[in-house]
Image 1 (cartoon, rainbow, N blue to C red):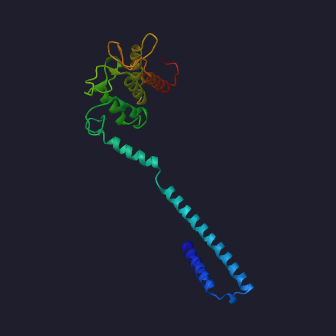
Image 2 (image 1 turned 90 degrees about the vertical axis):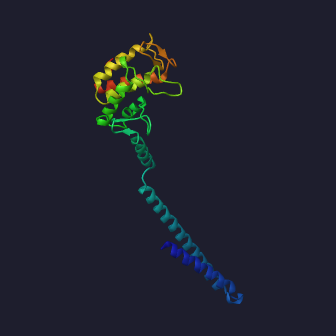
Image 3 (image 1 turned 120 degrees about the vertical axis):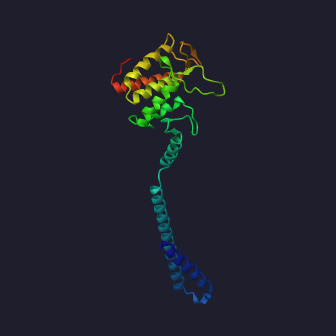
Length: 235
């Protein structure tokens, strides 16, 4: 409607200008010139008003379209969820390292600690159990994975993975197991309680030393257990 009104006003203005240019000068008295000026001002005002209405209408329309559109983060999360679920193996009841892979990777424990999987869900509990069977060693150490990579087959365990495991155990309610494994892992620090990147069952420290994310993993695991027990000094 506003667009039609604008077109009519613009058309009338152009037509008036054409008629004005064709009128003999002696037909244009002082009064008629004033009328023409008044009419021109009125047309300009109406044109500005219609343009303002058009702009306002388009802004409202675009705003409605934006409000009705799904938030970008929701779309991104939905697409990410679809990709993650393609790595789920229903036969083995676990998430593999990658889509189409049969290999396991302890980094997938963070799907539990970062709340992708519900802590009370069967998927979370079954995933932990599957990783335990393949990657958990005695004394609570945990391989990130055991398949061949560019360096070869892993010879040492990745300490942060062991702390992820403790954290995940606490998430799903296996508090006693979490505390037992945490107690075992503390022996792999040196006499100052400092942890390396990797460790072996004989107590050897490997990789970067000290390693920040080993300590971050320890802190996160201890804090999780503390919150579950509602006891700050459980250690």
